[in-house]
Image (cartoon, rainbow, N blue to C red; front, side):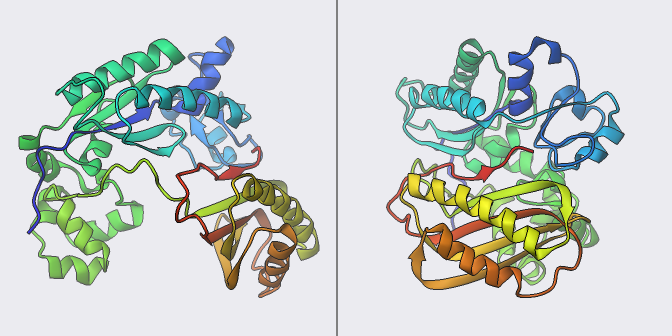
Length: 360
């Protein structure tokens, strides 16, 4: 049986309220105030919230209407993704001065394998501290870090002393750390799974560890094996600097809900044009076209079709999208539409951040 590998040294760096912090840094009038990036008090979804806003319960992915209800003084700011990418690139340059094994998860977080590093420093904790200081001095922004023997534990640890802090879970502390951890803190265990685990009497890591593999596979399918291993400190996933793009997507949230498929097709044409530009830029094509629909009640539906050949042309994409759109009647008015292309020709391509979103 595989076991915990005490020799690996993994750092997870997570920027603190990245989008909102950038806006507060660039605009002094926003500093110290509750800020939401994206959305509005009438429409849209919050993409990020400052720590001042989080005190009121404002979080990413909630509606702007709800966010304003939680925090009447909330200031909405339109996202500036080019600015975020600019700063993200500076941060990644810092990472690569320490190791080439950098795996970005998004613009504001990444894994670093510093088992062998360019500084020759055996202390991952000191390296994380130095990296965070470099980020602060060179960008003006704070970052938090988690340090441990694998990606799973490092990811959880980075959230412990936020903002502007770090936590190291040494090899001999991993098991006790995981046993005492509330199950809702386990990375990859969402709200639905948390509730299911509660019903099964699983509230902490030690409760999870007490369940045999057969029990976990019975109740959680393939994920059961994952839960069985990670609570024992077993997570062998490597830090990969060449993550493969799995899908390319473009989507748009509308100011006014759409109830007519004709109007939806007009919007989908614009989305397909934006998607095609990104596909052409990176020479990407795919076989599976997916239509994403979010209704006015925030429920979501996807419809997909897989072709026997690769496509990237907006005209061909729209043919499939039209077929998917009229596949069945809409159950309600629509607030968001999106198109994604997956099953890509990117087996040899390096990781690209290609998720494209329109202004909120």
